[in-house]
Image 1 (tube, rainbow, N blue to C red):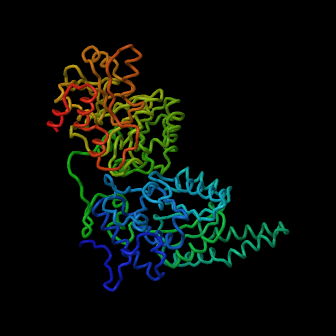
Image 2: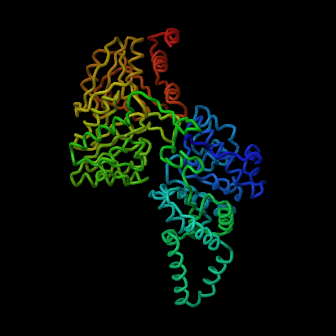
Image 3: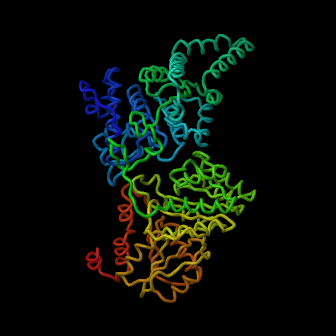
Length: 635
């Protein structure tokens, strides 16, 4: 039976079309908020079905988003969204409804909050667990400047478990500034009876009478220390019996909740009351991820981030073809785990994205999802390695950045046997600069004791994973998002000789030293230029013998990598040439010194001059070997 989005009552007025900013929203009557939520939810489903993007999280916070902008004076009052997956309703209500068709596309609006895009996007996000820190800074700044404003951080139950969030919570209680943290809990289920009681309790606890009694009692009993201590303990124990807020209270927050995040009456009363309170406040809101769209409610992880889909059936568009690099990794991991009981896999909350679902099902005792805690993931892996196990850390390149100190201090310094399977290396397309993995070659190769590899195709990726696993020390294989050229090998476990590249094509005068996914466009350009192509394979250690051989044959070196030029693989080549007194013309191609905005991966590569045409233009401009007219003709 086909799934259908919620239907609009025939007599319901169109409200969303008249809202171009929260000031328009605040002119509505309270009874109009619920039909607005239904309309906003329909618009969101329709919009994301056309563009793709993050869906389930946004559907879950429709009522909360409306309530926040309705009750608070945004943008004077600040709202900071954690990660930003759930911020599409916020974008729609803050003047970007008509731009949603351009979501995550080149020149369009970002899939995450972005300060340069709107004054309502108070903080740029994309990685988890940052909202409380940023909001706390804003609240402290408001107090320092003598400004009266409410600062609100909206954070999910997964993100709040991140260490950075706890660090911020700890400081917030000590600073005693006006900060409201909304814990969006979209994983717990609340039955109607319990939910009703807790909603009623939250209204009471956030109300003026309770707060007056609470503060007045403290004041009246201040001269009676023994009785005062008794009353304080009684109050906290009574609250602890009916709500899970003891931890937050101990950190200095006034905890309210949990409440139903889809109940406008409860949200309105509680948020209004808490908006009048001073000091650190935490509101626990329970929402349903995917709310209002049956396919997303039934499979929230599947509809977390989606390609364009059919609204009626809920069927997602899936590109068929060769296996993705992520799939290659997942298959390799299971093959090795079946033969080596020492293998354990670790991921910081990216089971599906890193290709670990099947492994986790087959080897649950050797699978660790540590949550959004990249720093902990690496030191945890180091501890496992100390005891003779073989940890494999599956992590996105942009998330590995968050654990740089642990990479240096806890893994590399001790030369521990940890394998890093680094997914989403290079440009990642629609997610934009927050998720681009264009720094890993630079920061990884700078660390002693490390082995760094970049495969040119899927089969080579499998071989490199095996090479890294067999290497008795820290080793990284970085591979791009999506599919490669379709060059596969079987399930055999074969490794590569460490530090050895290969010649893919002989030529005259000029040679490309290509790293990873850049081998293929270099081969295409080399056909026109009659240039040589070396698949370098290893960034660290470099194939020094190959470089010396090339220096005896070619006048011009062109290094090409999908990484920042500064400090990257090309820099390693130039460092080697300088060290050995080899004088050559060297052209470095890679990611320029700027953040690359969202767009299709092919568009981003073209923007950086890393497609065939871009490589030809760069080489022509630097050497004059091939006229631009000839390049334009070939394109």
